[in-house]
Length: 214
Length: 362
Image 1 (cartoon, rainbow over the protein chains, first blue to last red):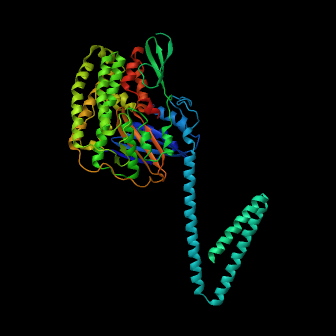
Image 2 (image 1 turned 60 degrees about the horizontal axis):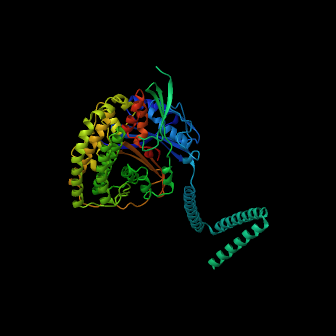
Image 3 (image 1 turned 90 degrees about the horizontal axis):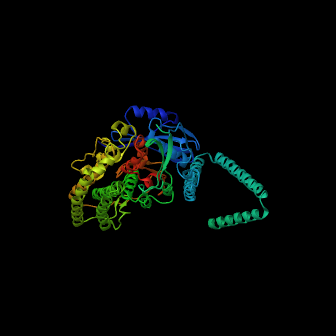
């Protein structure tokens, strides 16, 4: 007999029906587990038959949501269902042995849904890395677009090209002016001391950039 | 029929090495219902996976339980290897199984000693634990540790055994077996033990299947399910492997199955020691599990099938690690076995199920 394992999706409304079907087909209940995610809690049901381990994933059950208990079909699931309730806050209706949240003696409610500082820092770092990669890709696209435009203009009638260039410069200047006005409005709403600091930092940055260009 | 009374059993009880509480509903001297309660030693070890990388967590995994330490590190490593697509060298697989089967022998001998102590057979307890010490000596010589071995790594093992050591292990096991045969002969033929165990806490094959029971508890009810029969790792190179079963389903059958499994483990170790191939003992594992990738695995622990699950998040830390232990799966079977038994037999039934609460709560 060979061992195989796999994952497949399962609708939350199908949980009980699926358990009944598996029971009738001679599948053995293996376990239930939960995974906390930002979108909700994934609940995984595992069944085994003839060496085939199938994990059925109910995705993103809302935090503090409820599922139908399968403990009337597989009594032994009461352990995992009570555990998931205590550790993740997912409720189960019709539990055969319901400990009403007292299965484990816990000092914190739903401890497995707490995002640890380490996890949070890791997620923020990942988000920053993703944003930086996206910004780099956007800058590359912009640069490529500018090069394409230059090539297009070079191929144009010089008079027409000059007109297009002037229109583009005017548009860029207008956008710059608008951005400066927005920034001024923002700084005006700030604490004057803080605004002065921001202004100084921006001037220093501009001076540095100018120096680098020279 | 008398009035129903609830008698609390545990969490502190002379026959329980770990905290398990039972509310026993009794009428006269008969248990008519039982509600188990755990949760006294929940440590939140699975949560630690967020702050320990996948290599470091192996040391957390083996601290889940002192008896199943080797099995947990092995099950965890196999799951992460599945997650990352790592192929373990053949020699490492053999070494892993040799240590794992030694671990099964020490677990069963420990249990046998505790069971004998509960029978009131204290000299038997001493003999079983004396033999167990010799297994721990093997661990000490080959790994440096007696309980927490720390030999498994993601990608292989961290220690090798030379031919002389393997021969020495086989010699020690031969020595253990001759003493063990005498113990088992006494244990399985002693009238006072039979009086306490034969026909007590019986579970039929149908009920065992219905309750998805695992391990020796299920095999004693004639359920021929043992994860080792899938032939994963070095188990696939065994000439023959058949799960040890018994049809009676009572406490005596559970004692018998475990007694025979010790001999089976000795044979497995000797066969693998004679076949072990030369080669590397580990591969270097680079990179991190892919975000959202998930893998599951099962392993035959001394108490039965243990399920492992891992999910990656793109970093060296896992998003989730989960273990469903055999005792967790057998709690429902335990409540069924206790229904209808005599109050005086409760401790014997619980002991022959061999619950491991530290594993279950993690």
